[in-house]
Image 1 (cartoon, one colour):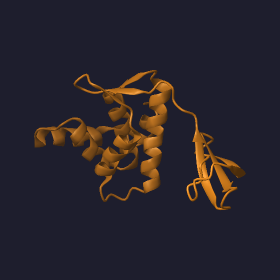
Image 2 (spheres, helix red, strand yellow; image 1 turned 30 degrees about the horizontal axis):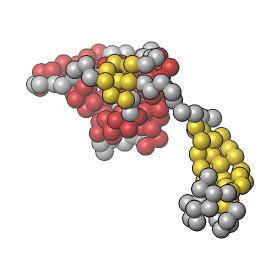
Image 3 (cartoon, rainbow, N blue to C red; image 1 turned 180 degrees about the vertical axis):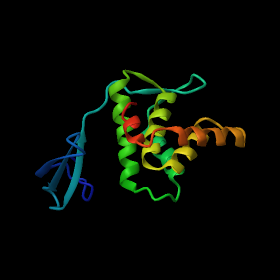
Image 4 (cartoon, one colour; image 1 turned 90 degrees about the vertical axis):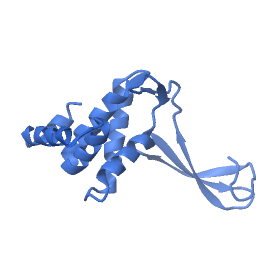
Length: 162
């Protein structure tokens, strides 16, 4: 590795640890040129990139950041911890990679996000659903609220079905 401080190309690994549930290896290194320490992360490169098929048929690379943006917007100033949001995104990402080979419909991602949001915060769920379903009037919004109210109280079990 090239030292970020002096650009010397020789170092030694001081410590290696698994990170991110074993998906990443974190290495502490010491530059043999200047003696400063720095950290690197190593993970498996995905050879077949998962593509998302959007409503209009276009295909874009799967993006964890796009899911997180939608979740952050839906949660707004709701009392949902950052860790809960990150966990939700990680679960959706993991499910998408596990359940789909090369392409995943955006609908499948949206439905998973909505199911998990409903289990965490119903207001955030409704906010996300209003964008996802593209409500055009108050009647559609009210109907979704009624549907949410009719669902069984233990929504967490439903979220696991997706």
